Amino acid sequence: MSESPSSMVDRVVVILGVFERSAGPLNLGQISACSGLPRSSVHRILQQLVNARLLSRYDNEYRLGLRMFEIGSLVPHRTRMGEAARPLLQELHVATGHVVHMAVLDQQDVVYLERVGGSFASTLPSRVGGRLPAHCTALGKALLAYSAKDVVDEYLWSGLSRRTAVSITTPQALETALARIRSTGYATETGEAAASVACVAAPILVLDQPVAAISVCGPQERVRVDELRFQVRWIAAEIARKLMVTSRRQRPRPRRLITSVPLSGHVASAVVSETGR
Image (cartoon, rainbow, N blue to C red; front, top):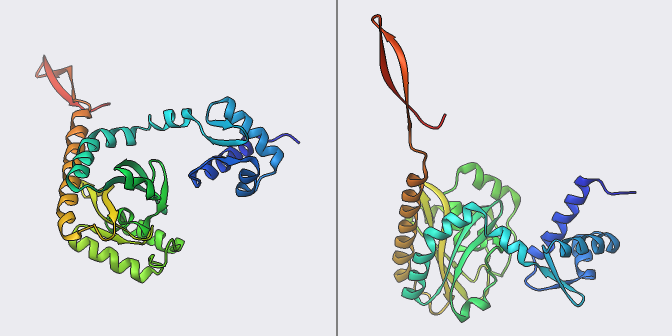
């Protein structure tokens, strides 16, 4: 029986989701096992994705293709955020010597938009486009702390998975952490997403809304929270300021329309301002 277009789309999404959770190449058997789809269907879809350059194949292994990166780079949110933040993230990396991240909240995860760092970056589980559970990261906790109550309630209801022995796993512990972040303006993480790694993060607030967050991460013994918290908060505020300036520049200018209006038996010209209609 042939597959309907909707079921085909669902299967493609499931298969691409397998790559989202993997850092390296995968073979047919691994993709079939992780997706729960029959090998024959997976093989056929993989070939179509390779032909479309969404995946690339080397011998018997598959990985995400260059076209996926090309399409992803066109996402307006990441492009605008990256343009505003990248020079400041680089400045923060140079000033601290630590790996610097920028991420946004997407349901139960943080999605990494930018990463700046040296050799230590290769030891971290983060990658551009990658995801981690929000409550296990300083970035995610900074974002949740300033999110709307219904967003936090839904997050708590979904359950708190554990990544390490010290990850937060109870709603009460997370709510306590979020309250502390709101009072101090920054979030911390020590070994909650990766053992022996510490991070300090701050939200990027635009009109009091957390549009993203930034963090500095390094070996636990080298991260000095008392020093880094000021630098991270300052850079987050500077990025927010740049985003506000960019947003104002991109707003459409009011158009001035000349209309004729009868006035006391005469025709008078009236100037009417209109915003985008």
